[in-house]
Length: 324
Image (tube, rainbow, N blue to C red):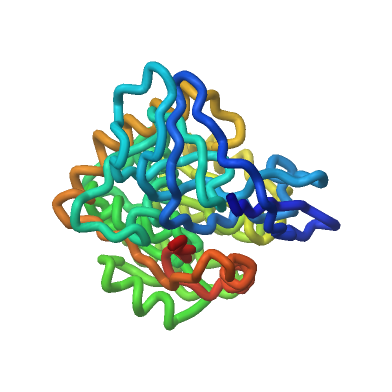
């Protein structure tokens, strides 16, 4: 089978197409025939220590496809079942999947729509619900709003009844994101946007901020929070890993700061997140309140071009690769 691997050289991610045997599922695993997969910045970035692999590693972390084979003991899905799932090495024609990380695909969904769901919406669930504890009527700030997780966070925030502020570097992107229900849109290109957040919230500040950019906006995110505000650090596409922390504000406003990363989770923790996503997010996907946003679809043999498109930061939502 064809499989893309990723190597990191001098901070850059390089994709390599390899020919590998089709894997066999062991007990508790199932083999997915991949029909579509999506690109995720965290998986591709070569500047993040958790994702470096000088010798190469299978690339791709979520996929949609059909169950091709199952190992002993697998009862959750039968052969031919359409599922979307998180996994390791999803930039391939076949991938081994833990059934606990898979979800049935809604009948009306295309492969491309389904591939846009797993990582982005599970991550949004972790940031907004599991750790962010976002409630109806609260203010949600999404910085890096046009990314896959950014779009998922906006949509989930609205479903939860929150008022949502989106921050992006492009007015054109914000105009499109307003259709998803943004209550306020802020265009910021490196400047401190906290005063605009405080103005939008009537001086209250955000109850939860989701930082999808990194260290360059951390200070503005923290200053944007109100009393008892929570700050989720989800990504650092800017490559800035260190940033000043105002301890006086953390203490005085009783702020909480937490990180969201798949890298440190055990299989049981990942399964727990999938159950939470299935319980809290899938009903809104099934009834149409949440519709995945697919920016562009590339054929599988153009995966390097898809990566270049994502690296340029041009997309709104997800970039998907389709396998025939």
